[in-house]
Length: 168
Length: 121
Image (cartoon, rainbow over all chains, first blue to last red; front, side):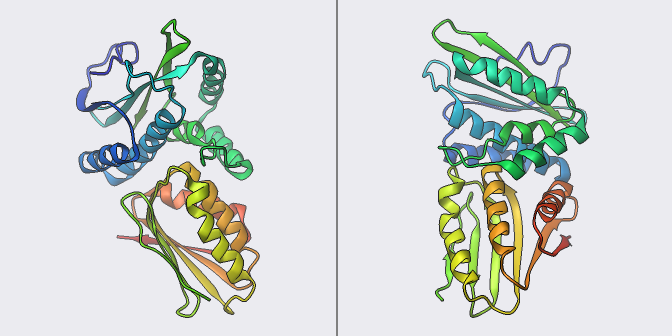
């Protein structure tokens, strides 16, 4: 199961879904459909699933795909809070930029995150993978509170990236 | 002008662009991995339609989920539609789905096209 001890410190949420394995389009659709069936009410379900779509796409498109560390997704629930936790490897050269982007988004309040996303959408260009580079900004605006994240050096040119968001 | 009909899957939308019948609709989930490539024929159809459009064009969006790549693609479609006289958008969303309503509002602020927002029960 996914190791998210550092992201879950002090909490004991109910485990809803744990997935570790490749995140092909088919598998992402399966996880999305599963989450759709489990999460209520609709407002939270849709917000959570949209953030999950971006988290899974980021892992699939930008992960470094080390066979020993397949991506992982977990959904947890405590009271009215739904938590999405994800883990995937990234090449170590991405860590500084990714960390900086996440810290920058984390420093914004909700209204500033909305503005940030709108500005990025307005100026977005398609990249080589057919995405628009908007995923992290979208995840940040969906989250209740901050995106929590850690990087663990695997000492082989890759880091293990763990991310957690709560949605209420 | 030929109708563009894309049948949709679990993660791509149903698209009907039919000039003769006056039906212009995008519905379902839009989660293509490569949104730029997936929406290219839609964009091309709109560019062709813009050369000889109907007097009025109402484009219906009834989306459940779209990824951020699709957001960019939809915005590009809206920019292209904004060049066509008499275009209106009908943006449908589930009543409780405030994020989908807000997404429509964001698009409406970025393009010069009248939007009507319609909540579904």
